[in-house]
Image 1: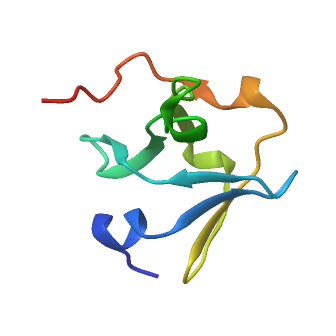
Image 2 (image 1 turned 60 degrees about the horizontal axis):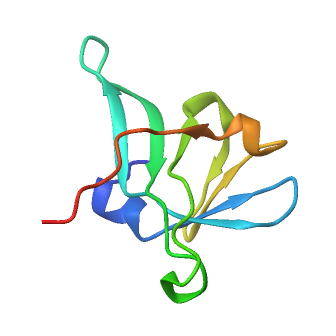
Length: 93
């Protein structure tokens, strides 16, 4: 199956362990030497309308992806420790 980044960004990312919707893909990490996707990056979203700040960014390694479907991307994260925290937050301009 072939997908563009725009198509990936429209899919919900769901953790198959607990059914939690983690968000949508905001960015990708690519290996320029092999032209392969290494990680999916989901930027932090506001908690409860921004009152409680925002969640941390989540970086999901390619080996944690179980299925890329028509509407969703299923990933297997056993705990928050498996979702790598990304320190490069998207900066608002």
